[in-house]
Figure 1 (cartoon, rainbow, N blue to C red):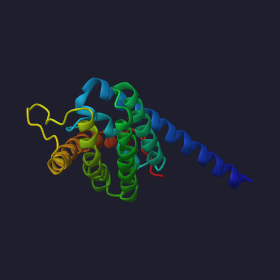
Figure 2 (tube, rainbow, N blue to C red):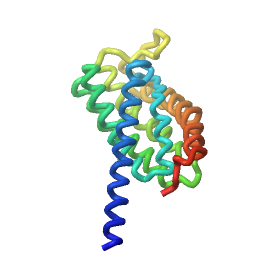
Figure 3 (tube, helix red, strand yellow):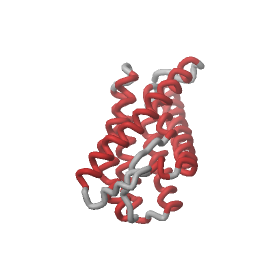
Length: 193
């Protein structure tokens, strides 16, 4: 009886943690999209909320929490931006990238530098595969801060996306995520499960 009660408490705690992580990630992503606009979802991305992903190093519930948070944020972005069905590409594949990055992070959690790199690789390879389709459907694919249009040249759009999104994700994950992870550990908020 006591063992089943303990399992139930652990299950309830994990569900609550996943829910909190989902809410924090979704809210932070939406604020980031509103403040940074095109730099949070365009061909060059510095989505500051991605720093939160480092919680997957010490929390198994972060895997479903981050995934659900990404789904929620991307659904809301579809509604706010008016991308319609094209925005569903981001809901499905952007959330898949977050899920795969979180799984990688959990698998290699004993080596945090390698672990959080999973988010960089997953986003750099997956997001540029659909982003050109989505942005062209909206009528543009111009490299930000330039007049260079890559419309209709999918291999170049993908290659540019791999580099640009990879760099943006790496900057956020390593420059903001690592200090966040260190702070969570220092204040005793990061307990390995």
